Structures are given as C-alpha cells and as structure tokens.
Image (cartoon, rainbow, N blue to C red; front, side, top):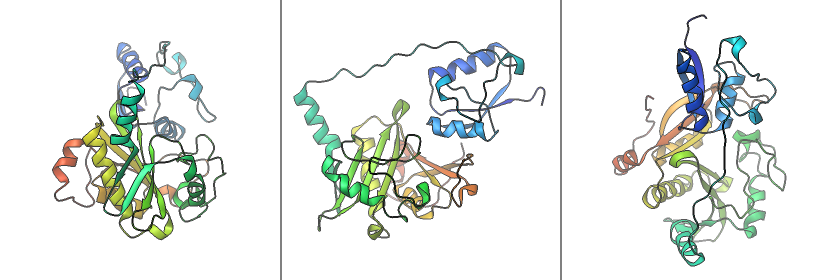
Length: 292
C-alpha cells in the first residue's frame, strides 16, 4: 500500500547489516516498522518467506522463495560491507585451563553432575536421538544420522567435543540422562537448550539443570539475556522454561517447507535478563508474559 510503513524482520541485536539497512531507509525518507526480531538468521528468513516482512540479508543467505528487492520496488541500494574475523586475545594455557574448569567445564546440582560433552559421550548422544518421542517436536520423531543432522536443521545434534553443551548424569546412579546447552550469540545473548532421555522426564531434572546453567551464566559470565524457543504445542518444554524463570515474550508463525503437526500454532520465544532473574529467584511465577 503506497505510503504504508515497510514491515521489517531484523536481527534482535544491533549489527552492521541491520544499522546500514535502517540508515539507507532513513536517508531516503522511507517509513518503516520493525514487526519481528530474532537473534538468528533461521528466525528472520522465515518471516520473509511467509510474506510477512522484508529483511536485509547477505547475498549468501538467499534461498529459493526469496528475491532481491531494489530501486524498481522503490527501495534504496544497500552499501557493500566489509567483514573480518577476530577472536579474543588468548590467555596462556594455564590460565585458560583454570577458567574452563571453574566456570564452564563442570558443575553439579542436587541430583545431576554436568560436564562438557566429550568424544566418549558420543554413543549416549546418538542413542538419545533414536527415541522418536525425544525428537517429536524437532523433526517429527525421525532418527538423525550418526554424524549429526544436516546443516540448517534448526536443532543441535552434539557428538562430543562441543564447548557449549554439557552432558548430564544422575549423580546417584551415574546414568546418562541427557544434555544442556547455552550457545552464545550476539552481544551477550545466550540460547538455552536441553534434551533428556524419556525415562528422565517428569522428575524436574530438566528445570533443575536449566536453572543451574542460567545461574552460572549470569553469575560468572557477561550474558545480558538468556533466550529459548520451542513449538507452541510443546507444553512440557514450555513448563521447563517457565519453571526456570524465563518469560514468554512472543509467538511467531514461521513458514516451514515441511511443517510438523502443530506448527500452525507457531513457535514461542522465552527470555530473561539478569535483573529479572535476581528479582524472581525467591518466588518464580508461572506463565508470565512480557509485552515487547
């Protein structure tokens, strides 16, 4: 509609590409409205595929079903951007080992012992994905290949050696019960994940491990926010997020080429910030929703 605000789907955090696109729109006196934000490419691209919004993406992210808009559609060209890869200056090996051991390598809860996954965990990790109920809300219950899911699957398939996935064993029995993950994103955003064996369900182990991981993230690291997502119909996973203290912030409706049953009800996004975490630890409420 002529004169209407352009609907935009953007990365949630500030980025060079996001700021360049908004600057180009402002320089050309175009009205825009951000209708959807997400911390990852896998979130903003479906919004464009569904025809809900336009989104600035690198040319390498163009897939079937998307087209490049430009001057003919009344949009300004975007500038060429230059990127380089950097990493934090590494401390000496002794210091690095101490930091890993005290902050990330292992921790315990009342009933669980968690440690970063190793190659020796591979058999247990693969077996976990052989249970169709465990994978029901991820890929419809299909087993994943031994070498992991294909790129772009949208879910983790750890095989040992990852530095952001912790294997969880029941301390009393020593039995493997599943894993927890906290993947660092842009500007201190951490994405919480977990996957437990079916015989560990219903015992509060998922929320117990998740609470400990979030507490460690806020206490020992510089995370500004922890986020988690699941299908709206996955009530068990949503209960874990709520018991952990995360707040429901939005429901989105991505377009899926191969939709799972229940996907028409959308994906829910939960998150929590450090101040909210501190405020709610003494009396964690259930089913909170924050307007954003």
